[in-house]
Image 1 (cartoon, rainbow, N blue to C red):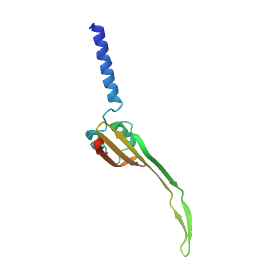
Image 2 (tube, rainbow, N blue to C red):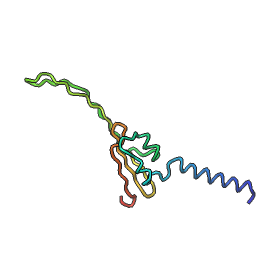
Image 3 (cartoon, rainbow, N blue to C red):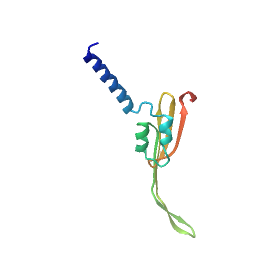
Image 4 (spheres, rainbow, N blue to C red):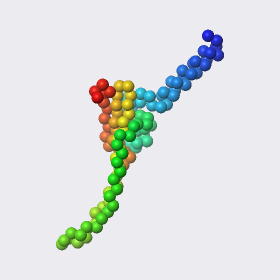
Length: 116
């Protein structure tokens, strides 16, 4: 095989390998899972695991309200604004699911793909 052809194939294989790593191929593994901690932001988790698939996305916005209670008068209820999101990452062997509340990790699970 001529030297230029061999160099072409080496560069092509290296490019494919680096592309696979950069898109998070196999990032749903035990090592990265253990790095995910409560309180981490969604972008920090994405940096570890790659971009996951959103499973659930909920936003709640309840405005404050004044309630009149006999003998107690008017009472103002506080407003409530919160969000929840569940994302999933899959590899050939593992599935990682992370729950976020207001953009921060509140729980995580890892299961074997065969256990489904």
